[in-house]
Image 1 (cartoon, protein in one colour):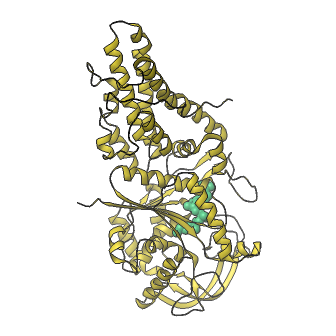
Image 2: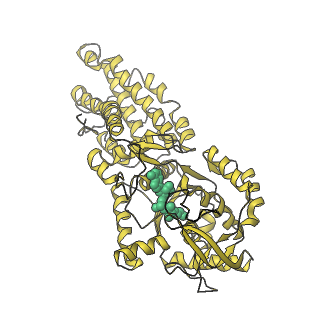
Image 3: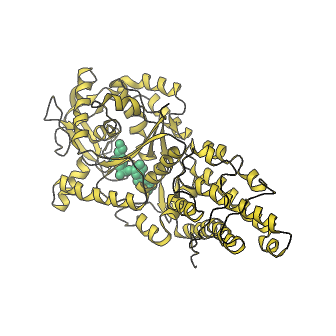
Length: 508
Ligand code: MSP
């Protein structure tokens, strides 16, 4: 039987900035989910990419005196470099300027026209270039964008409207049938309430914009950047180009997005898909926003937390760990170096790294590095503590509750450290009759480390690989996570190779 597909995506990022902690957050969260699903045996497809058209990018290029394409080609490099450094395991990276995507945007517009979902009219209203979004009607003569606070621009031009208003009822019915469509639930309620208030047709083309995909049936008009952007999720998996592939991957299982762009994903995107006769995605998960030392991050304040700087100080895995552990996925959070340092020292260096280091050190000291057979006690308190681990991880990860999954793993880490204190291997070692008991204790600790090496792999892949290497295990686990997490999988008789501490303590 073929493995089930799991298709997940990040937003595609504007090529106006290098990656910062916000864009990094979505990408790391998606990566942890992709890695988790792969371990569970899914045929996983993880897509990320860049959003390269639109006024915002056009102006960024103009300011630098280069063409938008040259600008995009340069900035996209920062994303490739960052994702490589952060160990992001995407299967595909789409750029909206690629022909494979532009063709699909044109095909989709043609279909919308043919099916009667577009009508020509005139748009008059306010536009926020930074958010690439239309503002609600207002009496204010110089309104500011409610999302980003920047001054809006007046727009008046001929446009094709997408008949979004027709989709109010179909959307509400779809939400009713799919109560897990938007997560967390309280954000779904907000979306539903707004849709109930009514939907206005959406201007989806512009005549004054140069840097965008031209419409096949009316080349004076070019695509509104958000329609172009949303279609990336479909064009990357064969929509309108490879029906077999599209049938395999679609509907997407999870779109991970920030709360600021939920409306586009939870309302416009499913409506557009319905208009094209395509099923909406299964889930859209909106995460919260990070501030930095209590302040919103912005170019003007120049206070972005840069992932490469945190990684240089603490390591890539510690950054990945911190972002996913610090707050429940969905809520807003504040990045503070003091919290990073605190978690690093106490949870990574203290609890986790110390357990692995002392286990391997004792294995060397007491057994010459060869894992003993747990002859008299094949199971024990650590077997018990690990018993529901898979079930708990699955429950947390199926709702993208990374912090819950990590809390559960750390419960096990702490239990294992406590076990060391209870059984005192150093005393057993002095006891002439303690050899067998010592062998059991050391086997159990090695087994606990093996289990941890699997459990943390989605969040801390390099650490997990190092643990497997130190334990003398093959790099790849071939069994599914559920099977591999069952107690007793550590072979005995093999040699361990103690490495350097995984997370050396930081002073101060
Ligand atoms: N190009 C659009 C997305 C199109 S998807 C079809 C876009 N790009 S973006 O580069 O501006 O932002 C991408 C993501 O980064 C969004 O999900 C946004 O929520 C996230 N973040 C940007 N700043 C953030 C924080 N400070 N904190 C958390 N996430 C934030 O929007």
